Length: 506
Ligand code: HEM
Image 1: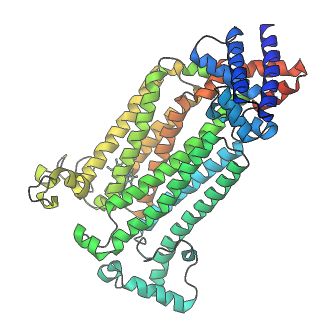
Image 2: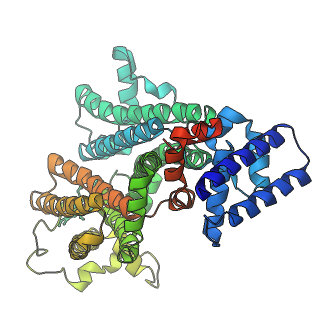
Image 3: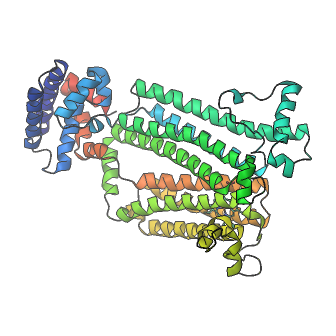
């Protein structure tokens, strides 16, 4: 009864506010209405005195009055939405935060798959030593490969001027050059394709309001990261083409391991950002469609056992990422070509201290850079660092797996499955790493090992996402029982506002 009257009255209140917002009512009047809505919400007895419940009532109010992302399309202009939301102390974030179309989520997850693919292709480009074959960066005109003999000869002539040709590849023929050119060209073309497939739909979704402002901010961040990634790719290649830089590093013509790892790290971030956002959208939409189920899940997520698990899951994701980056350093220094034994490194468990902290790697006279230069530039030490991180990652996942098994009852079902998958992937990844070392980095194994690192990060990310509590706005809405009650009441209420609002929750 109480609920019935609450919804009836809130509906009427929402209608009045909508009218006020449309009629550009004076601010004082709108503020008065906001305070009325506040008193109303607090006096209803349905919501508690807590601040969280207050914000739930404002979310409820904003949705019933049509002031949500979807509502703004149907009921009013975005400035009316902003004004009314501000007057009612419903932040635009809260008012608009819930609904983003599932299509946006599928597109994000699909694009993250393309990023996965380009990381693997990038690894193949490096492993086939093709990455320095294109000596210029032409973001637009470079989309087309040379056409006809004359253009190929011209391109080959540029390559013949590069340090890589002069010092390592002076024997290669035009046909062999064509192969390495096409590897690098395909990598760059794939990058351009990801740019187009990401940016054009992102604009479309934002303009047509299929994505909420909250998601739009993330799309903007991901677009910037995508642009940065293209630049980082060229910045990396430049380090292998510029003889001065090679001299400074005292290196053969290869790219800097720092730049390779930065490029790899940015790709991982892009991948994780797309996947995380896509999963968030799907999850929230699912909750809004089925508030009763979501309520149960929220209750399960409130279990105190999951408190530490949430932090551990994020920590584990970060650790897997760092381990992958240490692998990038190994790849950048070709450090997998030495110490091709496991578990020992050569005849002993660890190389001797003199080799691990070789003074030749220090560049300062006082040798104050001895430690960090060896950790990041000495192939022996870098390999040992990667082995150490990998071992720690394996035991970290094992510990989480055991902890999850111990608290099985408290874990959401899907998280239980993911933690098993995580255990499987980390075992496979360690095995791939070991075989990559034992067989002295054959391309198929090394490439699968690289793909495995992304698979591991994927499993860790999905797990962290599953045990995470939802965003505040969704949480307060579902916790208040609002969505469930709304759906129940709508069936026979006959109220237009109620049926409009209930659609928002489906
Ligand atoms: C959690 C476990 C591991 C992760 C996440 C991981 C990740 C990575 C990544 C991302 C790379 C760079 C690939 C590239 O850019 O081409 C790499 C390279 C490498 N890793 Fe691992 N790795 C793990 C375990 C291991 C283990 C246990 C070993 C051996 C004992 C190993 C040996 C290597 C070697 C030799 C390379 C260089 C391959 C190349 O030159 O392409 N890894 N790793």
